[in-house]
Image (cartoon, rainbow, N blue to C red; front, side, top):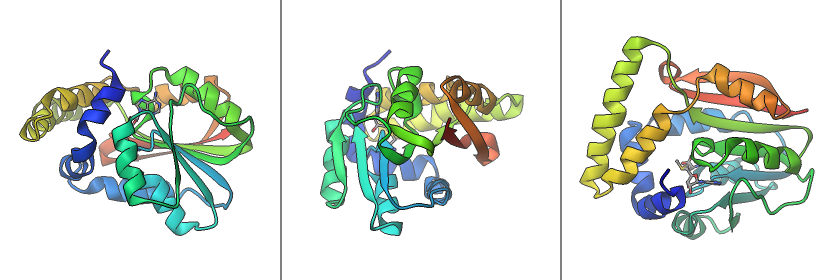
Length: 220
Ligand SMILES: C[S@@+](CC[C@H](N)C(=O)[O-])C[C@H]1O[C@@H](n2cnc3c(N)ncnc32)[C@H](O)[C@@H]1O
């Protein structure tokens, strides 16, 4: 498996631009719906924060919230820190979170859980630092079981996206990202993983013919 930290360090400067192109601008709509699931003020952590899109939008809506973003990629964080001065950005992995037990009111992960080294280790850590009865919100691509959609998605993932990556000199990195998307779980399978890690999944919302899914899960 390629080192995802190197992958994201390598694409940091083009990440936001290519995201807009490959999602045809749709990622902004998914992200606004994602954020609309948050309704509180307190301590919030965005894991796999990347260039800080999600956590900065949360800070705009909830200015009194203490906002943290964590990510292992120095280069992604460098861009986040340049753009958003009022957020605490920390370098680190979801499998080893540098926070005390029962600390956060809300934890978010957008398009990051599939890139972690271990989903179960990450969920164990998230469970530890989240306060009881508080929420973990995850947005991620999903594997489809529909044959026609699978054909179309594979064409898009393994032809269009790598070609766009190639145009920016990042073929290998975008080919890896496409593979990680096509290998991820169906919503049912991922719900089971959350439940096995002591989260109660309260809602599942799907977009783009079920290719993008948002899970809202409460720490039991
Ligand atoms: C596809 S980007 C998502 C960035 C941002 N959350 C967004 O929605 O645009 C995935 C991020 O996951 C980070 N990542 C990879 N492995 C990780 C790990 N083990 N723990 C936390 N973040 C990780 C990468 O560095 C990268 O910034």
